[in-house]
Length: 175
Image (cartoon, rainbow, N blue to C red; front, side, top):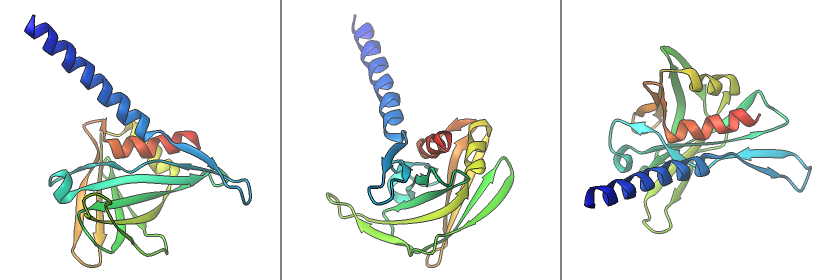
């Protein structure tokens, strides 16, 4: 009986987790009141990094204008670090592509509850490159900084999408 109850609870919780991630990674559509343009945005979700989430945490989110469906802005967030990000490299199934940061400087913020420093910067990426994630076996990333080297990790590992990759793909699918 104890095993049955444990299995039921475990299956219920694992189902809730995948539903939660899916709801958080959905692209939200908003309409600008000034000119009526539609924008898609997603929340920041983590990618897999070599260090633990808090020590080497890198999150991905994005936004795009429906008027310009060829490109989107991929926002990279460093958790627990104040760094000036310079370039984003994506290695999609062995092909490395370099992306430059938007002209806006790195945004520095601190968490409300924990006061942990975070750095965020946008990179202009073709939507076609993001759509490749769905059928890729491996998508690795490297974000270089001006101050302390780089951070590396994976958005897709053995064909499995990270939460950050799912977030970006959901925007690309709506464009």
